[in-house]
Amino acid sequence: MSEITNMYEKMGIRPEVLKFGNTIEKDLKERFDEIDQRAEYNQLKVLHAMQKNHVSADCFNYVSGYGYDDHGRDTLEKIYADVFHTESALVRPQITCGTHALALSLAANLRPGDELLAAGGKPYDTLEEVIGIRPSKGSLAEYGISYRQVDLLEDGTFDFDSIREAINEKTKMVTVQRSKGYQTRPSFSVAQIGEVIRFVKEIKPGVICMVDNCYGEFVEEIEPSDVGADMVVGSLIKNPGGGLAPIGGYIAGKEELIENCAYRLTSPGLGKEVGASLGIMQSFYQGLFLAPTVVASALKGAILAAKIYEKLGYPVVPNGTESRHDIIQAVELGSAEAMIAFCHGIQAAAPVDSYVAPEPWAMPGYDSDVIMAAGTFVQGSSIELSADGPIKPPYAVYFQGGLTWPSAKLGILMSLEHLVRAGIVKL
Ligand SMILES: *Cc1c(COP(=O)(O)O)cnc(C)c1O
Image (cartoon, rainbow, N blue to C red; front, side):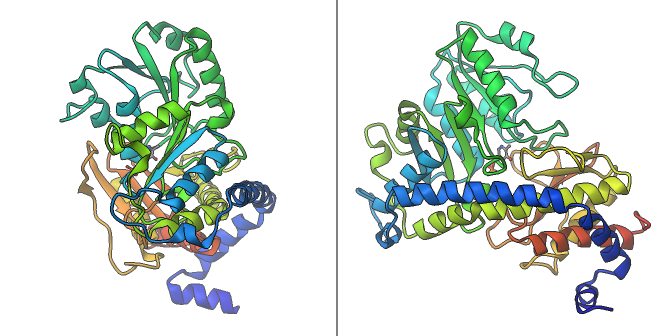
C-alpha cells in the first residue's frame, strides 16, 4: 500500500472507499482545470481592486470608538465596490450575518405601503420572519410593507407571465436569490438573473432589484451586479470572507441605496461615518484575497460529492455534469438516518471538534429540526467544510465549503465511509 493509502486508513478511510473516490476523481481533470481558470481570473479581479485602492499596512490598524476616518474600513468598501462593479458598498463587522445584511437591505429601502416581490419563489428560510411570511416581531409586515411571491415553473425557470402580473403600483423592490439555499431547485446562473432583471425593469424601470448573493461570489467571472442588480448582498462567513473573516456581511450597489443601508445600520444622520473596525480589517482583506481560490476548492469538493453520490444512485442537485452557480451540493439521502451518518462523516473529517457527533436540533429561524456538521474555525462558517439540512422530506443534505481541496476531499470520503459503516451504502 502507498503512503497516502496508509495515511487515509489511519484517518479512518477504508481502501475501498478511497479507491471508489479516486476512480471518480480521475475523470474530473477537465472540470477542475476550468474551475482553476475562473479562480485565476477572479484572483486578478480582487488583486486589481486592492492595488487600485492603494492598500497599505495602515489599512489594518486598530480603530476604536466612533470609528471616524477608519481608513481600513473605508478603503475595503471601495475595494468591494470595485470587485462588484458598483458605485458603493457597505462591508462591516457590525453586520452580524447574511440574514442581517439581507434584512438591512430590505428595511433600509422599503417604506410603509411599499411591496416586495420575490420573483424566484420562496426566499431563504430565515427571511420568512424578516418579511413576515411567518409572523415575527419587527418584521416588514409589521411596518406595513406587503409581500408577494411568484413561484418558479416546474422546470425551475422564472415564470415571466406571472411576474408581469404581480408587478403593480406598490412594487418597490424585486428580490432574487442566486443560490438554492435549502431547496432542491437549481441555483440561478448570473445570466438567468440578468434576464429576469431586464424583464422586470422593462415593466417598471424604477424598481430596485436586490440579489441574495450568498454562496455565489466568485463562482462565475461575473456577479449579479454586472447584469443590472441594484444591490448584491452576502455574508462574510461564506465565500467573500475566504474563511478568514470571523464575522460580517456586505451590501454592494447603487450609492443612494447603500447610503440608506448605512443609515439603517447605524443611525439616520450618522450612516457610514461611524462603526469602528476594531482591528478586524486584516482578516477581511486577507480573506477577500484568498476567496477566489477557496471558492475553487469548495467547487471541486461539490463536484466530487455530486459524482460520488450520483454513482451510488442518490438524486443530486446539481448533477455531476451541470455547470455550477454556487458552492452548494444537495444530496437527497432519503432518510433521517442517512442524513445523520453523512453529517457524522463530515464532522469527523474536520480540523476542529472532529471527535463530536452532531445531532438534529431546533434552530432559531427554521421551521423544522436541522442537523449541522461544522468543525470550523469560525462558528457556523459554511465556506469551511460543512453539511446541513432540515430533517424533513426529501431528507436532503446540503454540503458546502472546504478551505482547501484535500480537506474537502477527505470530508466527502469520510461521509461515504460513515454511510458504509452504518450499512446504508454497500460498495
Ligand atoms: C446563508 C444564507 C442566508 C443567510 O445567511 P446567514 O449568515 O446564515 O444568516 C441567506 N440566503 C442564502 C441563500 C444563504 O445561503
